[in-house]
Length: 100
Image (tube, rainbow, N blue to C red):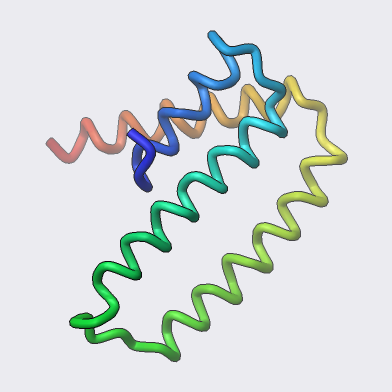
């Protein structure tokens, strides 16, 4: 439930039934996914063939995107962010259903 795909499901649960503010729910979800990812990396590290240059490039790009997203999120109305997230979730679900 809290893996990479599960993090997408946890966010609406934190916001809707639990009443967590959206910014706190996003931060919590990202933290849980990051910890789960680090645990997975630690488990696979001894026997994984990792392309470190690619991993570093993706890490830098993801970090830059996170910082930019955090700045933009402060300037956007929370209601608009919720609606955008809902639309993104629905679009993702439809795309996944279309591949089945």
